[in-house]
Image (cartoon, rainbow, N blue to C red):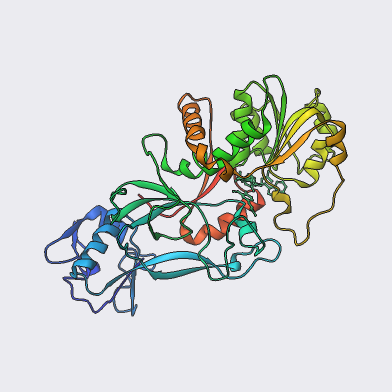
Length: 418
Ligand code: NAP
Ligand code: FER
């Protein structure tokens, strides 16, 4: 976001010169009309309130070219009244139970400048993931939690727009845990380059990113499915579950999905090739349903949700079953963990294995997962879906929506129009 002093002279004030095909930002340089159109949105309606009604004119830099141009002009000193601002979502309060929009706040701070060895990234997509819920809860975790006032943790795909790091050139697309903000400076730590020729860059946060790798390693390394076995996936229509189920199909398994709507069930069986699926929100007796859909019992259970669904699945496991404990989303918003049946006895009787995993434990093998996932995508053997909400200000709503199950596939927020 850019704030412009309305008293600036017409030579430095683009809004005053935007009537024609070009708008002059300085006496020597001009921007094409296309960028000007994207660049100048004043309180939602281009130019109409400028300048008399607004003491400060707010301009959103919506295109990368425009943002790059503005920051270079400012640095040269030719736009002395222009201040580029950085929109970001911070944690305003620790959620109690189910998060509310008021637990988050949109704040603006100046855009940072890269120092030696650093580069400036302009975000294009923000990732919305279930792990964010435990991360804002304030409990102990594998990583530092988000404190009140901190920028929300989260994956970002964006473009390098300025660089003082020889390994990252302007124009390159990168992905990393850069936080829910428009602009961020990085030194490259924890950041990877994204090959935009491989697939749309948004997939770096989904099927070709952390969720895809979770499905891949969780299923193949922890679940170890064999052809002919029955694999049950809970949270099956989400970012991880939808990929885990399809990989199980690729390995020759019978795959049964559990998800929270009839539309999701149709998506799984009609579009993703699951053998069967059921809607846990309208199925009164999970036990009977599983008996009908898994007549040979369950060999691998890919658990994304925990709770009553998992309790029911475990009643149907076979000897030497593998329970892949990927997530427990049914518990994330509870103040106290739910009590349930004690099913460790089943592990004894069935000589079964339940194993939790974190995708990060496979970090040194991501390349392998991405190679296979990208190969299957290219061959048309793997499908993915994204649920994209537009606008940084809607990220909290998208997060709450994902926790409620409004997404099919990967939940993302698009924060740039180019
Ligand atoms: P996702 O499945 O795309 O989105 C979350 C889904 O959870 C919602 O769409 C909703 O679908 C379902 N859900 C919400 N509340 C539920 C409840 N009470 N009972 C059953 N289902 C519920 O999210 P994702 O990114 O793919 O993550 C899926 C799971 O994997 C999460 O538990 C996450 O924590 C875990 N995960 C673990 C790792 C790891 O390293 N271990 C890595 C990534 C993700 P419905 O409509 O079906 O309810
Ligand atoms: C997730 C759920 C939990 C996840 C990571 C965690 C990467 C880790 C939690 C912890 O260490 O406290 O979906 O995804």
